[in-house]
Length: 184
Image (cartoon, rainbow, N blue to C red):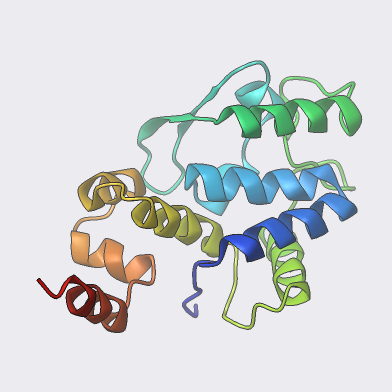
């Protein structure tokens, strides 16, 4: 498996949302939930309607770690969930997949990859982008907003801060730039 990158430009995130919204609210929601929760794609794709309907939290058992987690959902993301359910899934049952495919089950990991990659290419992103880019983007923007690295490490369930920095794409050049700008 090849390494993918976070999306590091806010303008590109907004452009991707707009492109995905034009295809379907489902696709926009997949992207928005991914970049705002830091969930792995396997956990996103296993969500059911009941996991997100009328709630501002998602409670899941992570597939990879088997750990129970509760993840807060922002008001903006909750509004998008409500819109998606009203406009594209008005008769959905609680136990149905949130991200429904045309075949009736949840969309596949490959289909999610195709959706995200097509949108990323359409906005001019040439870096390697994949489903894991959503999780990395979450970590990257949390870091850029000043969230303590130890907290990001915990949120992403990493074993070290060095792993977290590498994961979110913080480069030696960026660290050097900080030191040089400080210039006390």
